Length: 107
Image 1 (cartoon, rainbow, N blue to C red):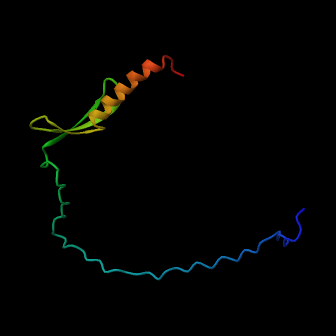
Image 2: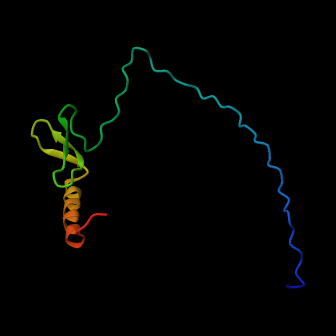
Image 3: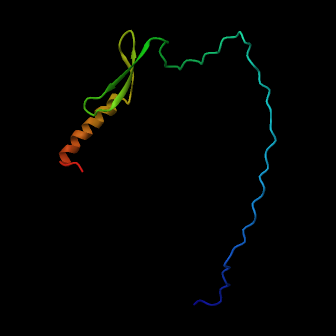
């Protein structure tokens, strides 16, 4: 036993929590649009194609079996965006093929 140290208290007093005070309610004036005014449209994104020219295509990647989405230009049938990107799907397919070279059994 070490001597010369002050005794360690067995219980530490914990102060009572302070009561929670609610903040006063603040009312902001609400300006209602006129009833005959049309609803404002959100601004278009900078790289967004014109409305009505995009189609959504849903598919399943053959090598991975993963579902993907494509935004396709309705007139030219050009793929504008793919989610996940095709490069990611091809990487996953290549990765699963290469795992077969190292592992020959599945747990």
